[in-house]
Every structure is written in C-alpha cells, then in structure tokens.
Image (cartoon, rainbow, N blue to C red; front, side, top):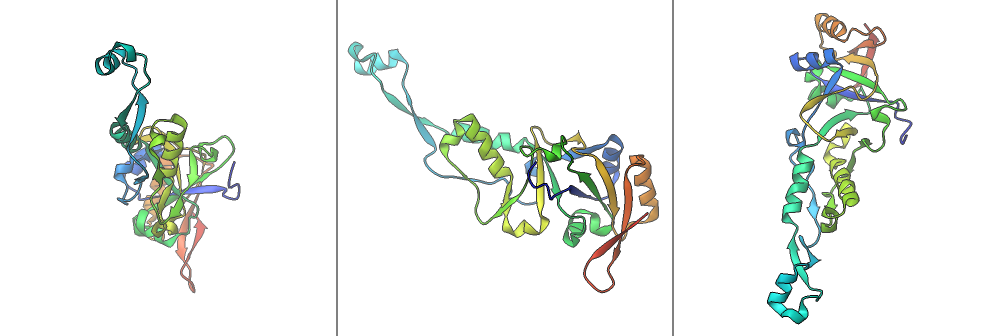
Length: 244
C-alpha cells in the first residue's frame, strides 16, 4: 500500500435524510463527475490530430480504384477518432467517484461540505485488503496548473486508455489544494456502495445538537464506532474533539 503514513481518510457530510438512509445501509454515495461543483474537473486536452491511418482491407474498393492488378496493394485510409473521443468522455461521465480528505480538522471543509459545522465527518481506516488501501482504485489528487494531456493513440490502446482516465480523474487545479483530496473510483456512478473500509469514528461539527448526535449513533448502531464533537480552540483558529 502506497502512502502508509495516511492511516485514515475522512468523508465530510451534512446530517440529512439521504445521509441517514445511507448510514443505515452502511453505504456511501458515489457521484458521477457531472455532479461535481468544479466545472474544470475531469477536463482534459487532446494533444495532436484527432485522426489516425489504417490499412484499407476492402479488396473491392481497392479494385474499383486501382484496377484488378492492385487488389493486393497496401493502402492506408484516414480515420477520424472523434467518435472514440466522445465515447471516452461518456465513459468518464458514467464513473462513480467518492471524494475523501486526509484530515478531520480542515476548517474550510467543515464549512463547505459539513453544513457549516452542523454536519459530521466520518473516519475510515485504510487497513490492508480494504478498497481505500487499493492503490489502483484509491489515490490522492494531483494538483496542477494544467489540464491532463491525452494523446490520440490513447483512445486506441486499452491500457493507455485506462491510464489516461486515471490521470484525468486524479487531477485538479491547484486552487483546490486545501482539500487534500483522495478519490475512490468505481465503474458506475450516482448510486450507493458499501463503505470502502471500516468506519472507525464519527466527528460532529461544533454546532451539532445532541439530538442529532443521538440519531446518528442510533442509525449506525455499532458499538465499535467512536463519536466525538468539535470545540473551538480558545487562542487559535482550530478545533479540538471531545468524546460524546
């Protein structure tokens, strides 16, 4: 497992009906990329001509153009890759993506994704054999200034195609670097999947009321899961967690 120093990954969530229903099932929602809040996410740049050359194998066409004495000639034809490019884009759009973070103390993440501290943050442990320990399915985001580059040949070679998909899905603008995001990616999006690793703990925002904490505990119904609530630091911009 790469990045063994990352022992856990965290999912920030509001506490709502959909989230509670998913908790009761022991599942998480994997979104299609079209649902992302960043329109630049999953964009890529095609470097080079969007066509290739293939051998013409239709002997009737060769005979029609060159005559019977050229029917066994080797002739190439220009083939557009636009249809393959559109298919490649659609395949990316259909994938399911679970976005996770490396810290449960990211103040911006609490405000942006956990309902302004009225939500929660779930901690999943990256143990060996879990989906979050699978280096092919779960990786950290590479933050960059440029869109990932795709060569036309990548549309024709299966291995290169898969590699290109991963480079596209694990790349984002440096502006999002504060999230320290990791992604777990599956083939079909916009549906619930079982937790990708054991749930270790749930952290509640500093504005969450006790009745909501009790509700989440009741829904999860697992004595091995620990629960904590955030308190604001008195002298610095930060939070601490106390067991509840």
